[in-house]
Amino acid sequence: MDYKELFTFTQQERRGIATFLVLAFTIVLVGKFWPVKPAEEEIEDLSKYYFPEDSIVEKDEHYEEDIPFGQERNVQKRIHQKFAFDPNKISYDSLLLLGFSKFGAKSLTNFVAKGGKIKDAAKFKTIFGIDSNLVNELLPMISYPVPKVFETAKIEKEKYSTPNKSNQS
Image (cartoon, rainbow, N blue to C red; front, side, top):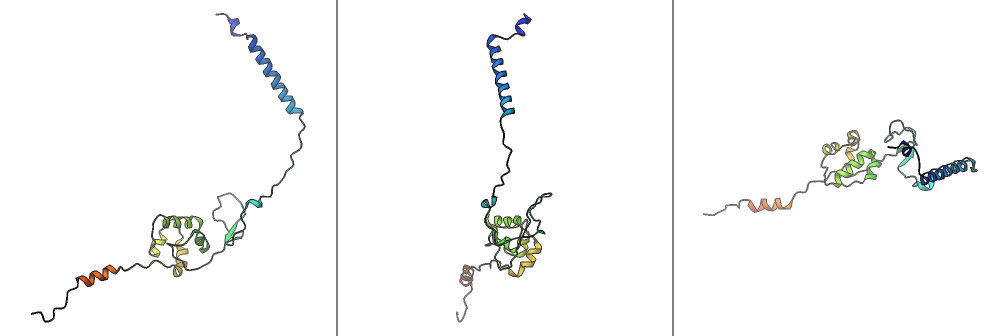
């Protein structure tokens, strides 16, 4: 085996290497001497991307719900209202107005959407993410569905009742 073959390039390979070196050198020179304007910091007005302020949100520095640990941002506080409601028919936004957390409101709406029924306060408090203290506070305003008494029960009672045995001899 000839060592000369291992350490030499063919004429085509030498042309390719020369072309590559010329192009690389040209790109470096153009990059070094190209006139560059200093970057002017344009601050784009991002307000056009935001929704208008919602009536349930008020800026306050003491509200820290849903802020990841170690992050600071504009802190907002919800204005809580109290009104009568049925937990089986209430919407997500209405739960936020009542003072439920975003997670608790989503949990309750998902529970009801999947077919769950809330029949009493004990069941309401067992839903994951619901604050039981808030439920106790809102207890007088919560209306649960009244169990329906089926008319068939009355009909069956009348149907199978024993007739009066008067003067059957």
